[in-house]
Length: 219
Length: 252
Image (tube, rainbow over the protein chains, first blue to last red):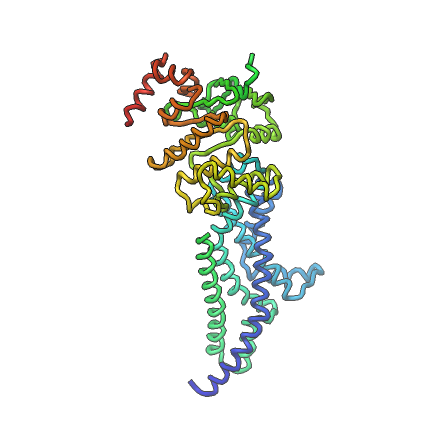
């Protein structure tokens, strides 16, 4: 490899990493946190069978899981301004990623809640607890433990999916790489470098997930 | 018509699963301090009957009088169900300990959350009942760290901590390894001696003979025969009872 290319890669590493730390990670964290809260609500209203809300949650999951993430981004960022709703790119991306993650995570949570044995509910009733007390104090803590590995996978998936935000002008890692590649005519090297940074992020998350899973199992 | 000591009286309790009759009008009378043991072949409706008493299953027909309060099961209100559950404790075949809670937390959960007891008072009571069932060295163990016998003793401690009028035991030793059955039966024997009112579904005939004040033999969802342990085990009046007792004594 030529010296020039080395220098370029070294220089650009920081230029790609910095939007990674300042945009990609905050985008992931905000979206996942909000998405998780949406998922909790969407899963519990379904499990509890609350009329109206249950059907609404099903509709939400159906629509979001049945449409591409990229199209969802376009609808919100390029489509809504047609109705006078104009968003800055970052919050628009957070909303789309949160709503998207929430749909998948709610299915994970719902399955995890339903996998808690019926006897746990019955024991709760027998000591005098009501439905919501049992759900929040007994069932959900167990369900979250079950749901932890698949939710970790969703989080790792989301880190990579945030690269799609480049298409709605969010200057995250991939966008930064595109700009440097356009300027320097070294797309192969730069995109490989970008891929490497995503790989580093995801490796750290995977390690963290494995560590926390081990800790959860010990409890 | 009831004695003044009457604790629980059940009249004509009926339950169907789909079109299948599981309970065909069961009657039961018991006084404070009675230990009623329900025996019968599997599928006879013993467990369903027990679960209908505190509405883990919804019975279709019948009247329950518990501690002087009458409930008609057919159109029972949620509030009435919680009053019944407040006066009954339940011990499950598979223990059903809260898996995310320690032994002590299993006992205190209902006290704190449902009975609104102060945490320190609940923990004091919790330790006391765990001591009573011989688990003073296991307060902070999670269910998966306990043997089956220990888990079931926590299950019993959880039930008695709430000081119920009647404790319902659903085959409390059936899921246990044989060598662990004794420790659970010993705890139940102590409770009987203390004068606790108990209904026990079990296959432990020797135990039934020792602790029961009344034995009820159920088959096909009806009471075939009831009486003192001597009457049922020594001189059963019904052929079906004799047959059943022969079949279980052959089991070894």
